[in-house]
Image (cartoon, rainbow, N blue to C red):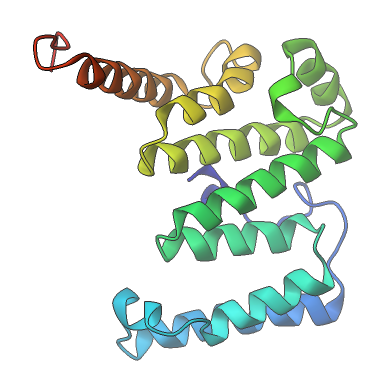
Length: 196
């Protein structure tokens, strides 16, 4: 979700891509656009195991598996294909790599407000990217009916972003309601959630 708002500007991804990897990303974009222009529907594209746009992205990933531009490109591809489980994998990869670059614990579950504040002093744009990757993963998990996992990913974001500048409060509310609905459903038909 939020990774879609980011482009490949150097302020997010400080190391430039090797020319051959950039060429593969460009090729993937051209293939994706040409498939859209020739009238191929998402259903048509799902019939093939790997289309040419995806193949170019996978080759780019093999050449530069730790470059965030490649990770974001794959995230976007899977998101637009409604392949949310794979998009979450790419969001989690972005979280891991950006945590590593910021010198944070690579396990996002261990991130604390103080850690994120120190990271923001080092690079606010990289810290913002990390938080948006957590939020994007949470949104995708909600789409897959995994509200508790979404809440867990939103926890470090809310701890750091207490003024809700990244707009997580509505997403968190959605996730919490989904958890309550699950609990009520598991309790049987005699309990109902007020407001629904």
